Image 1: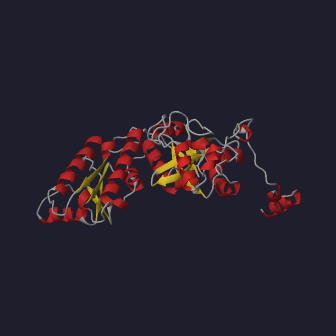
Image 2: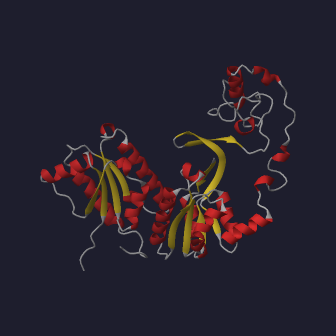
Length: 234
Length: 139
């Protein structure tokens, strides 16, 4: 899932200070799971911002809202009236949610309350770690299910660098060496022969280069006729 | 004009927290009547939003009172409560609001002296700092 973290409260308070009517909009998907922008976090932020406004003698109106998935227009439309009625939308979703609202209502000012961070998994309660960088060309079938691009500090493709020591990484001794983990996993799976195969230079054209990546699935796209039908239903 | 009374809200767990208040009263100890006690099943149930909402609604100071940490009725409830209080304190500090408005305390039901002591401390904080801001006023 996408893991995000709330910006420092002081930074958010400074961003919203000039605006009178502020709608704080959270999301019930990834950011709710990583405790950054779900219903509870929205309520906390709204309450904290009200206190800040009260402390500084500013007349500001804050309202908290939460949508199911802020990155999908259908869900955002449910709070359209509230968005149009605001001076500022403070998005507590990942950047995708904030940008979706911005694209749907280009005249509206949308600020992010979160810093969108990583594609991560919850390791334990309150801890999320990065396991994918979305390079667009997955190779974990050859590395025992462990991604060396995300989990190796140097994104090495052919075994560890000279800095691997006792299963730890030289960049940070608290971080496991990805290639040590790959070796151990392949040994467990009796597939150690894979580690001797040399990987050619990776095709990075599928990664973030050359501008925005767009994925299309033709069979899922609506025809013009279907689009007209859908519009008519609305 | 009469002096403004401080507004103090105390979230007390229904085990040792409330019992320490009851024992204080039964043993003849007095405490400031400004305190408004909210009984909760466990301080682990108190969330940051409850504390912030109390401040937003006009409380000058808020305290959370739970069992002693190694003697919590629900084992780790008062530890959870303390974590939430610390989180709210750091949020308030980030916003430039006095973090001492919010405190966590622990007591056992036999500590009759503890509850009046806590109330006295939080009333002092409330008197010293007064209400938060002036724009909204007290609700």
